[in-house]
Amino acid sequence: MWYFNSVNHLKNSLTSCVFIADDDEDDRFLLQFAFQELGFDSALTFANDGLDLLRLLLDSEVSPALIILDINMPRLDGFETLKVLRSKKAYQATPIVMLTTSVQESDRQHARDLGASAYLIKPSTIEELKKTVFQLVSDWKLAPDC
Image (tube, rainbow, N blue to C red; front, side, top):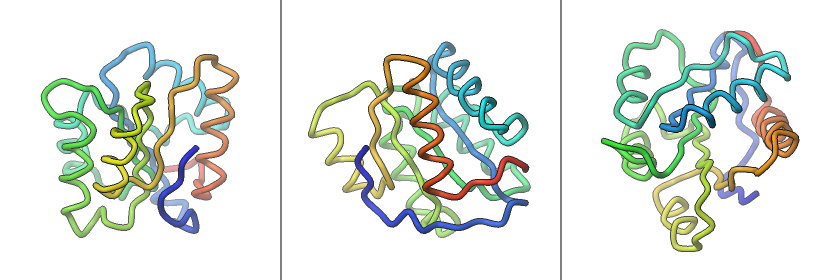
């Protein structure tokens, strides 16, 4: 795990929602399963790509406690989504994690330059994914209720 910014980000449990943008249906399913294992049944909002995520955030009545972005998505990829989010005052302090299959150093550096809070490689097993999700929940002190 590469963390770029402080992990001291605390949120009120009433606003502890996780927004996830990933175009891969299997990855969304596995992420949902991993979060549910930690009791985050109703705190997740999924988007198929960055454009859908921005629309969901605009319509949401709660502030996200964490945003997870895949890099390679149609219409609006993770980098462009990150750039848009960081340009908005409302999301400048929100932890935004890139969760991707890309192991390219240039992608990691680009994410850092755009303001990603962390850059994580998608684990290859469900057990590793559950550990990754547990670490995210712990690091950002997320509460399982929305």
